Length: 457
Image 1 (cartoon, rainbow, N blue to C red):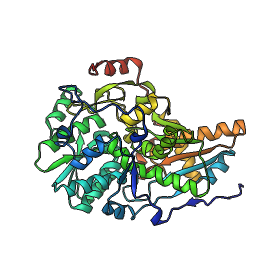
Image 2: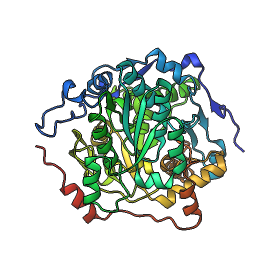
Image 3: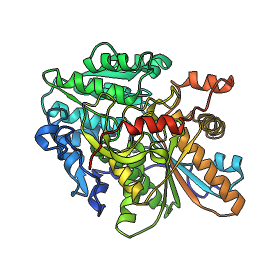
Image 4: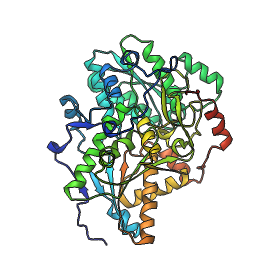
């Protein structure tokens, strides 16, 4: 039994919660490439973006020079319902693995939405309300973002329209009902409700959908309604900005006990939780102050960083959104109906893509079965049932800890546990019944979708 010299849970006091978000782009010498207008191939202007997004969020999206942006008091007051969130030392997991490694995880599942998504949802709803809008539209994969946004909209008395990836809509009916409890309307995507949805259904009959499809529908629904705007739960720079509160709190908790992490790990779908977790640590690296290893973990079934192309691509399947330079599998890529619904996006945040391209971050892909093996071990050790998305980070954290066991190195590992798995029991059932498969797209499949990407010189 290890001597527990550090508290099992490290809590910050309420008055220690950050009052500013950190904008990692300000410390990047080479900035992420700008969003492009798909018609002119010129950088998107404030005026072009404000027809889709809230004005203040557009300003945040275009701001790559201000290192800190103040968190409005009304948002901070909402955060206090569930923040600061704990940084937990995984003593029981360490003992189970018999590793000299020290493992910590930042737990973001201690709110009704069950994930980190509420950090950005409440910010985006606040700015929509402040602008005097009637409501917002969005997409959701596994359902955490849709749940978080429905909660935030309920708080500010805004209408909320959610397009949920069809496979998740069918696999996770209770997540859908939580959204409806908070007043949101939920539609399986692709649907017959929108022109782009009908077009996708015709092109891909029987498709189980993708985040790219749902984004297209949500954008069309927003721009066709007076007083509505579209909001996104990941990928965009504004979302990574809001999620930086995760990393800021993590760093403050570690600093309390003079702990310096060696490895920081996060699951990677669109990039919101990983980007938020590593932001202040990456800032230290960019400023030449410290060095860390950062590992992005993605599903082998949707491997945008490890097998994608770094190029401009549409952010959505329906090709109605701006072009973003990112690691991408092509906007027409339709991922398999795997159970990590929040990691089924074809591309990666432009911020993280640029950091990865500069060699400042590593990326690995893992199969679904080994992810659930890690999830089960974690649940039995630490008493928390993790979401499939977060379990990708758990898998690689365990792998790193086992390497320490082999080498005898006493490294400090930090990972993000950004969701609970209580609405993912169909997936756990399939794992336990031996019915889970580890689908990996072939080179030919990826060549087809990547080959269909726009050519931008």
